[in-house]
Structure formats: C-alpha cells, structure tokens
Length: 434
Ligand code: UGA
Image (tube, rainbow, N blue to C red):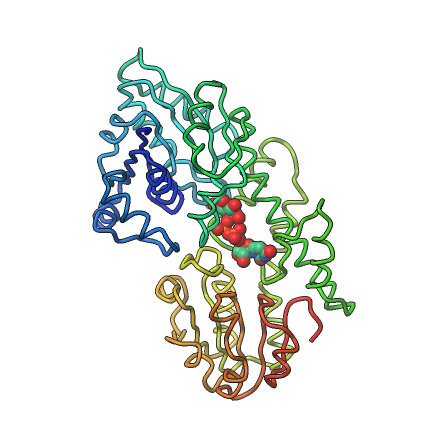
C-alpha cells in the first residue's frame, strides 16, 4: 500500500485517485474548491463518467479514499504527490500553467519528508524541471529531498475507468531510476505495460500521442470530403486503410471533427511549443484548420438540402462532444447551434445527459427536449451531432413519422444509407454516397 495525494479533483485527478485507491492504496484527493470537496464527501460526483460514482463510494467507505481542501496537510501525509490540476488553453493557445506552479509552490512549503512528485497534467516539455525549481525555491526544510516523475494520462472520457485499469502503456519519465521503479510498481496491479524514459520525453509523448490521433481524425475527414466529391465511400476507404496493421483502424471514423478537453487544447499547445522552439509545425496547424472547417460541413449540407434555414425547425440530436459524457468543451454543437440560430432556424435539441451543461454554454433561443421524439416532432430536418447509443439505435421509421419533412443529416455516420432509405429518409452523412 502506498500513500498518495492527488492535487486537483478534475476528471483526471478524480479518476486516477479512485483507481489508485481501488488497487489498494490510501489516496487523498484534494482541491481548493470547497463546494466540490463537500459534494465528493457526500458521494456526489461533479462529472458524468460511467462507473466512477460506484468506485468513489466503495473506496470512501472502506477508508482508502479521502477528500480534503487542506492541500498542505494532504501533501505532508503522503509519499507520492500527483499533480493533476488543469492546464486550460490560454488566450494565446498556450497551456496555462498557473495551477501547476501554485501546486508546486504548495508542495515545496509542505515538503516534510522525501517525496516523489508526479506530473499527471498535460504540460509543455520542460515543466518537470520548472516544478523542481519551484519546489526547491519554496522548501522550508532545506535538507529534505524529492524526485520528479512525469506520468501522463491516456484516459478517454466516457471509458476512463476501464482505460485506467487496462492502459495500453503507462509512461514513466524520470532522471532517477529508483523513483521511476516505485511509480512503475504502483502501476503493477493495472493490466498495463510500463514504458520508462526521461522526463522530457515522457512529457512529449503525451502531446505527440494526442496530436497524432487528432491528425488521423483530420486526415480521414479530409478524405471523406474528397470521397463525397469523387463518389467514393469513406467508411469502406477507412476500413480498407485500417486493415493495414501499419495504419490501424482506430481513430479513422469520419465525422464533424474532434472536440473535448484534450485534442483541441493539446494541438494548439504543441503548435505553440514548436513555434517557440523555432520549428514551424505546418502539418499540425493544418490539422487544426481542417478540424475547424469540418464543423461547417453540416451547415453546407443543410443549405443544400433546405435552401435557407430561416423559419426551419431543426432537431439537433446530441450535444456533448462525444457519447457517455456531459462534457461540452469544444463540442461541435457549440459552433453549429449558434450558426443555426443566426440563420433563423428554430432549434430543438436533445442529449441524454448533457442538456444541463449545454444550457450554460449555448446562447438563448434553443428549446431543450426531454426525449428524442419530442425534439423531432414536426421537424424539417434532424441533425445527428453525437453518436449516443440511444441515437444510434433509434427507430428511424418512428422518427420519420414524427417529422414534418424526412431529411436526416448524420454528422457521425451512425446509420446506414439502406436503413435510412428504408425508413423513407433523404439521408446525408459524411463522406458516404447519399
Ligand atoms: C483523448 C485521448 O483519446 C486520450 O488518450 C487522452 O488521455 C485524452 O484525450 C486526454 O488527453 O486527456 P478524449 O478527449 O476523452 O480522449 O476523447 P476521444 O475518445 O479520444 O475523442 C476525442 C474526439 O475525437 C471526440 O470529439 C470524438 O468524437 C473524435 N473522434 C474520435 C473522431 O471524430 N473520430 C474518431 O475516429 C475518433
């Protein structure tokens, strides 16, 4: 059993803390947000993540998992300190490092015994060294030592618990082999392979992995746009490409572009890091641009099928950036819905989980429906923006009967042309023949 403190109870800190507790460690999760901690102590989870609530409840009950706002005390009580605070995108596109640096300062002030400080947040290369300097400068007890390790996270929202328990790899970067060995040992109960490297390379792996996945998505979306123009089917193209084991089939699903808290932020951040380092990462800048443009493909299709949007009833199905989450960060719906409203459409939106979160982000004027049927009733067109299971498996004949006109625009390619045509729809998807 190891004694671990996790600073930051956002999505990454909370999931990682709960999973470390689940495999038998004593974990203190801390945060400066008092309301959040009060709720977590009552078992109320601030985010929607399947399985997380049960994991938190079980480990809180068996005294493996604690929540506190007393960050200093929590640091003093543990041997391993995870920094899992946010690194949001700043106005310039760079990662905002203020929360990481204030965590480092706090660690320095409360360093009462030798500890391993582990960076979990996605941070620019070189941050580990900066954290070391800040801790060193703020140490109250000069003779106490510490090690710095980078252990980036690779969890996907919506499947974070199983990802954490069965990671493809745990990346551990440090200049001290003993510290790396101890963090490797911490991960041994997980079904994962350990990859050890230096601090800077570990920090770079996280950005390189996320931006490479984003590149795959923008690449297949560009191919989809060409497919539409030359009469090919991107679903087959993607499958045929993916059968080559050098390419792989994952993250080749064409759609309306990537969103969420990671890919948009990390692509911008790496473009900035490379600019600063004197390298113009043109490829990555094009990935970002292609992703931004991809959202407007839906608007083009709407214009082509409906003519103008003024006065049209548009049912928007799915608001979250992807299924199984209520996360609205950089969700395509945040670009598409304001555009629909601007062009005079009446928007009726439905999402199984994210409506409340969406209300905080979207402008006035959207009607939020409590069911799919309600959203599509009387609609001129239904537009799929998130491929929730409920939306994938909806009965298209029933949906069509409820609508005024039978036009379905599928931004996530989650229905087949045949199924849509059998239901009587004029069906448009991304990169597949109409
Ligand atoms: C992503 C990475 O997959 C995780 O490995 C990483 O740990 C995480 O970022 C992070 O840095 O914290 P996440 O943002 O939760 O995870 O979601 P993904 O499942 O990767 O999807 C990201 C976006 O890409 C979504 O908008 C999704 O709709 C889109 N996508 C994904 C596609 O458009 N096509 C695909 O084939 C796959």
